[in-house]
Image (cartoon, rainbow, N blue to C red; front, side, top):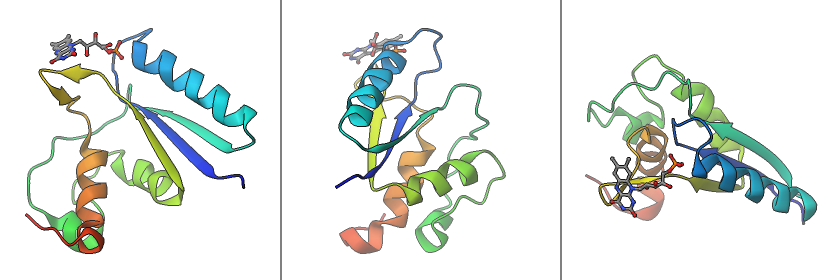
Length: 113
Ligand SMILES: Cc1cc2nc3c(=O)[nH]c(=O)nc-3n(C[C@H](O)[C@H](O)[C@H](O)COP(=O)(O)O)c2cc1C
């Protein structure tokens, strides 16, 4: 059955490995009949997480940036794929998407900070 697939490339580098992998993933998913959207965080206004944890209650960030539009796509997706560089043993830092998503789902997963 066709799924809504959102592929997020988080690298800010032009011609990045993440973009290349994201494109290949999109190609394969489309060939398999899925409904695919590619999203790059390059050029997006994403403010640093300030740790207020409002997203735990509202599923949204209190700061006004591009995260609201991105989260709307994330919540509409059935499958989310991250293509991200590793910087010093961690996924790359523009991943406020990841924080908001995890905090929004924290009730489902029964964990809380
Ligand atoms: C500052 C910096 C730190 C990195 N740290 C790691 C690391 O801890 N582990 C690793 O496997 N690769 C590390 N790398 C390599 C990148 O993850 C790798 O080159 C990646 O493919 C870059 O992704 P991009 O082309 O999508 O930007 C690091 C690269 C940079 C620039």
